[in-house]
Amino acid sequence: MAEPLLDLRRDGANTARVMFAGRSSSLSAQIVADVRDALFARKHRPGDFLGTEKDLASRYGVSRIVARDALRTLEALGIVEIRMGKGGGARIAPGNPRLFAEALAVQLDLTGVSAAEIMDAQRAIETFSAELAALNANKADIARLRGLLRDAEAADDLDAFTRLSRDFHVAVAEASHNRVLVVQLLSLDHISWPRHNATATPKLARKILDVHERLVDLIEKRDSDGARALMDDHVRMIRARRVAEHGQDQTGCC
Image 1 (cartoon, rainbow, N blue to C red):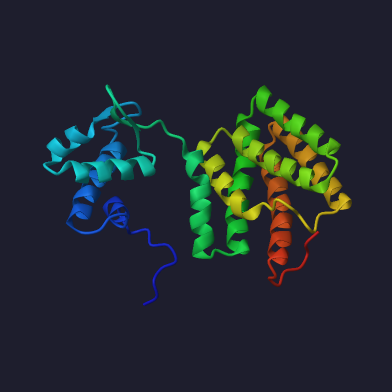
Image 2: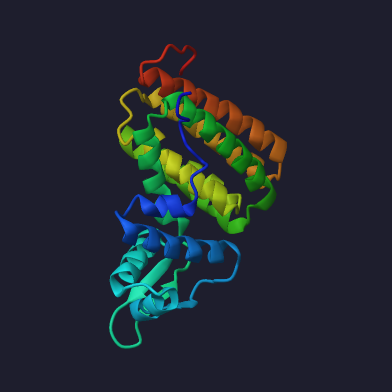
């Protein structure tokens, strides 16, 4: 039987083990898994003191080398922050999932996901983000969206317009006030959003800007169904262009 594209059955201990070798690897991985499980069980909160290298070695009955390896892995995973010197040690880190959006994008790219797969996922995220934005956006969100529209209108080249369009899409997701959707979109954008759009034209830019202006109007009017439908049509257009740019047989791109 072929291996699955993404093996979601791997637990935290297995994930940690790949970073080590030998018996010390299993001991280090067990510490990592225990801390991770305690975190998911809400036994640890951001800022909680986990201990020093010496504390961990004593608690688990392992050498300080093993404890040091475990702490380094926990730090690399973003679970702890480590301070050196007097009063130092490891504390549970504050959450910042944006730090890992690019890392997830790299792994997706290395896995070989297609442009179509990325854009299908992006369509799902962005359409729901637009719907939630119409329900949850506040005055500051609307002001930011309109500011991005003004900046895009004044953009003096298509690359700048492309960057501002990307910022607009992220701002719509942020206006949803759902952080999970925002991070997922940021991760996909690392792969899907070109830094230089070779197929962009002034005519296409004008069409995109018109769609964005209508979308902000719908969000401001709290028309969640309309915002969702318009974003769905918009991302389907983007999908067609992206897939065509990657050499797949698609038609209907603008």
